[in-house]
Image 1 (cartoon, one colour):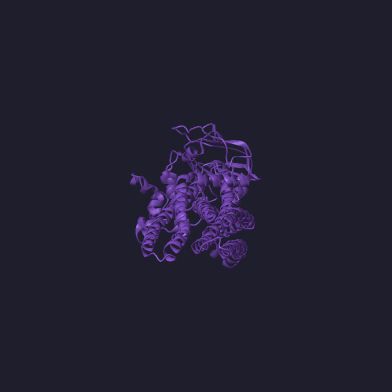
Image 2 (cartoon, one colour):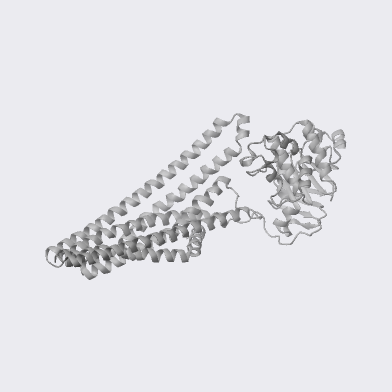
Amino acid sequence: MGSGELAGRDVLAGSVGGQGRRVALGAALGSVHQLGEALVPVLIGVVVDQAVAGRDAGRLMLWLAVLAVLYVCLSWSFRLGARAGERGAEEAAHELRLAVVRRVLDARGGAEADRLSGELANVATEDAKRVGAVNMALMSGISALAGIAVSAVALLLTSVPLGLIVLLGTPLLLWLGHLLSKPLERRSEAEQDRAAGAAGVAADLVAGLRVLKGLGAQRAAVERYRRTSRVSLAATLRAARAESWQTGLVLALTGGFIALIAWVGGRLALDGSLTLGQLVSAVGLALFLLGPLETFAWVNAELAQGRASAARIAEVLSAGPGVTGGDEPVPDAVRGELRLRGVRLGGLDGVDLDVPAGRLTGIAVTDPACAEALLSCLGRESDPESGSVELDGVPLTRLDPVRLRAAVLVAAHDAALFEGSLIGNVSSADAADGQLTARAMAAADADEVVRSLPHGAATDVGEGGRSLSGGQRQRVLLARALRAGPPVLVVHDPTTAVDAVTEARIAEGLREFRRGRTTVVVTNSPALLSVTDRVVLLDGGRVGAEGTHAELARTHETYRTAVLA
């Protein structure tokens, strides 16, 4: 048994264990319901023998009253049992969704590696729902087993041969149903994988819709999704065929089993071993057994799909962290001095770099991969392959990632806005310092964005800020980063989508707002680099030059090519 299967079983066990009381209550009520269902044909047989055959009106009314009471009990037991089962399934799915989201949002990362956001969303929704449904399936399976047991006892009391047929035939049917569910389990896992892939591609395309339109690449994007969707559809159809074959074969076996019981009962009635009422009860019990046996077919399908989804959830929950170690608290008084020594990661090739505390430092690059790797190191999204990154002389690998990211905020240029108002994206709902928010908005020139919107700062920006232009989104994102006020702020290309005049205003606003606090601007923008205290050029994965923007623009050809060309 592979580790993935073991992990999947642990997820299933945890889901069922967490809802054990509800499953037990639902199973108990379901068993009561099945007991009542099985008693109905028995009582009808009694009515036939004692009231109808004997033409006794009094007994007929008595047994009809008993049947009426029984049906009331059936109604309430079914309603209460179904409610307990459904609640157990929904609660389990909810807990699994929370577990997946917690793992994805864990400060140490790792769960998102090699997975698109749409795929993770599919795991947190559809897979969690399927695993949660296992609780309902188990409850139904236990109830169905109780119904079969009651029917077997009733048939044994009526006729030993009929009871033995049920007792010996039911385990065989269950075993065959389990074997028939194996292909469904394999194809269900493939179906969910392909569906998650299609969802991931769709989310990816929607997120980049503006870029695709700008490049005129809509047709290629649609074709890409069409291919992925076709693969997903093929997997879904294979899973549906497997489920239909499994259900059809189980129903055929069940029908044959019921026919055998009816045939044996008829033979016994013909030779006088059974009364008319007993024959009616036997046939009624045989027909009743169709329900529990069909339930087992459904339970097998649900368990097969649940196991496949549990394995996918387990992959996310058991994913290794993107960064390891680090549990020391960040000091309350952060000076903000950053130091890199021999850092190798991605495009970085042994970088030695000092960022003084309280200064505005610009970093220009000749290779965008260097910028991405540097941001990943400073934000501790990844640890260097070799070398170290330090904050105030303490290696980042020793610090708690959650507290570190509150002290060193890396504001990526492609960060997302949340659905809601513009002001809600810049300042948290409990923020009391409106003056600080206004200053941050002004520094990022986002106050101009507010004036252009129909409802000002209360305007809803839409999912991902899609109601705003690219330049407007950048200014709101920068305002949010400035408003957070971390001891160390690292911003990446915050003005690529704004005009030159606006960029100059933002550069001055950024410098003034962050005066006296450590700020790193990773950009090749001359307007931003010109307001920095010092510029570092990363060339070929190493520090190629240092100085002011004016000095490097005058004396360093590579810098001029990277920044001014």
